[in-house]
Amino acid sequence: MFFRYSFGLFLRPRLTFRALLGDHRRVGFGILGILALAIIYFISISIALEMNAMHLPQLLVLNIPPDQYYAYERFFIFPVGLAGTVLASGAIRLGARAWEGKGQFEDLFALLSFSLVEVAIVIGIPDLFLGILIGFGKVNSRGFAYIGPHVWLGTIWYLFLLIIAVKETERLGVAKSLTLGLMGFIVNGVVQFIFIR
Image 1 (cartoon, rainbow, N blue to C red):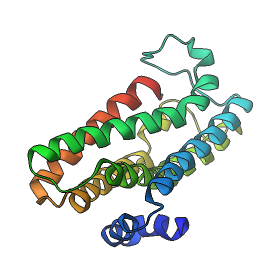
Image 2: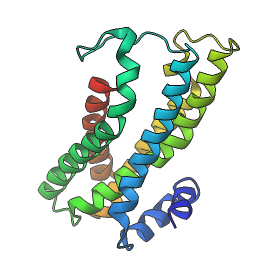
Image 3: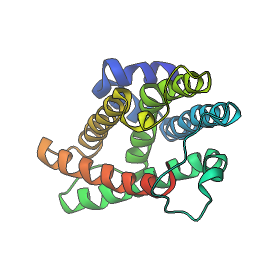
């Protein structure tokens, strides 16, 4: 069922979210979405480190030496993904309550965290292959990791899924769902900016 829902994120996101909302395992599937992203990036970063293919991170917020940053980052991708999704879900739920939204925190969390499967597939898997290509000297690592078209596509699609998730969960109009979706996206983005490079 997890894989069917995952494919549905790309083929029929609204119907997938509706089906997921009716599934008593939705929160568990959401946690699996965060875990899928964390596992892909743990593998990707580990391979890149082993092949000496990592670039030094810039604009560090955490007090970790740049040459050791990724060795640590591998281990906090899951907690950061969880924290960002919890905060985004909470912010959206509070905003939706002011507009008489009909959702619940657990439902928002389930859909937002499950949507990270899309990020794992569209951004994570290409990053894994780019890390390998960089390690073999086939691709120059300078700056490409953050500006590749897969990153923009994955980010835009995740935002699109977030807005649909708000609309399906809270039963609000398009403008309010868009506003709350953007707010949740920003909240999660701030958490990601602090920890993930």
